[in-house]
Length: 282
Image 1: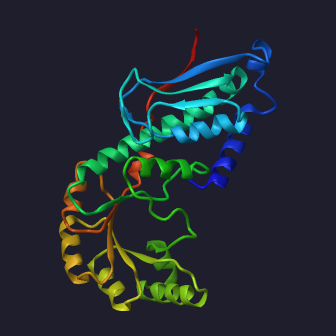
Image 2: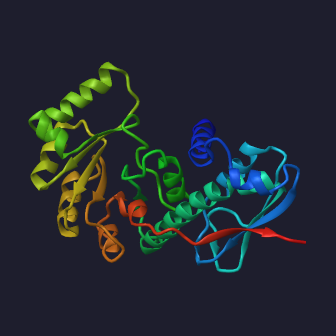
Image 3: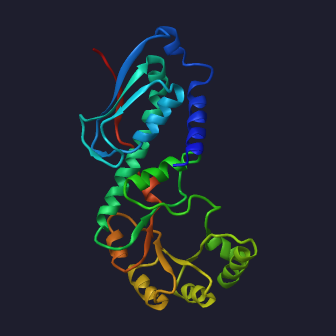
């Protein structure tokens, strides 16, 4: 993850939660109190966000001792302890909710991603996420996909050209949109790929005729249609299946020989994993 972006996220997330002070802690816990807390696993899943948790605690107090017992990407079970943090009780209590919210969400995404990845592990296709993310939390969600075994698609609007149906409709035609995008990349010396979304087999033929795309996306195609399209493409560009793909049918899409399979469900359909941060009393 980008360290600068991570620090930006932590700073603003804490500002949102703490405001002008953690008055509960300030009112009943001595400022010099020291303590220990443990992150307890309460539900089976793939753990994600341990490294982020360490950054959150250290952001508040770099003297905090953080001992990780389980790494990100590990399949965990109820009763396990992921990490232990030792230091200022004020720091532990102030960071608690941000750590839990972040890790529970990330672990849920990593867990669902792992289920998808396991479904297609015998195929060469790579599983991609999308931009269907939570505003200001995209970095964490995409990192969770990576931890779960998936591959990150473009991060935002700036690191790839993806010509979608609305671009094509507003531009006038798929060929015009591709040609204009290609000219833009050449004129501005952009080192970014061009991908185009196709809605039918005729779109695939038109996109191929330009010889200016790096990847063709098949949007809401059936596996049978994708097989036919891949024969036409014959290795001239990369291919991606997208739309209507879920756990019950993803293997049939992987079996087509497509290079990538993208699914927004990895993030927007994931359910958080139950975790807790509890005081350890000696």
